[in-house]
Image 1 (cartoon, rainbow, N blue to C red):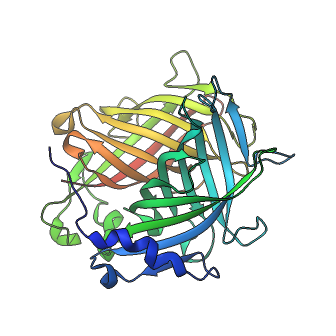
Image 2: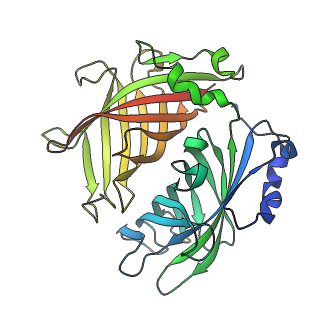
Length: 361
């Protein structure tokens, strides 16, 4: 079994290097030379405010627990991220997603969320976090599995420390120190232009155009995602109703949507998009997408890519991370760009173009 490891021991020192960050700024780029790295390391410190009490909670339980330690519960969140501990300090973004009780022996949550930044040079960028949060441990660590915008191809981890917790209300403030490794290749942002041509739904990009390492391949996939929630044979079924009809917050839909080579539904089917999407914002229609694209044709038959990200569906172009894959896409990372090509709210039909840029071995 082949395992890819980061051999730079210095990466374990990033917490020490970052301990003296001035709280006047929530983010800083660390010196790659100091860590003997060829990639850029960014440190973000933000404060996550989980409010489940009062008239305007940011976190709502959509599925109650079935056993002790909150096991089986699901809580949808749209939590403020600030630059300091007080909730009225500078707002830098929102944490959107869910946490679910995943242990019968302790209070431990599965966390799946996007940090969507809304200020400065990070405005519009996201990082995607997936991991285990044993909330009564002093320090917890979870994975950063991807990102969008400035954080395309990001990987890393977060360290959590509870700064304030009200046992009566359940409200909490948690410090998140995020350590992100970013690709330094500027040409990676030219992928969309380079990949604008091509008749087939998939093609391998020329390494010379984007200065890729010899052992990595960049593949561009263009697919059309057909989502139908109405009619006699819907491809998507809502399994949890929203708590807010205006934003769909709290809803969960299970999907098994066709992926085709063209906009028309009767064009060649190359795979299925299987997974869930959930309403994860209270002020807009923005979905947490957890999907596998399972390919069923040609050399990609049996291979998958996994997408986990934030989809603000009313925006013209949405970007989400590719966080992994299988088969030909083992060890994959990358991103997708989603553009709505057709939507009929009355019938519940939508067609979305997905341009997928996948680095793999």
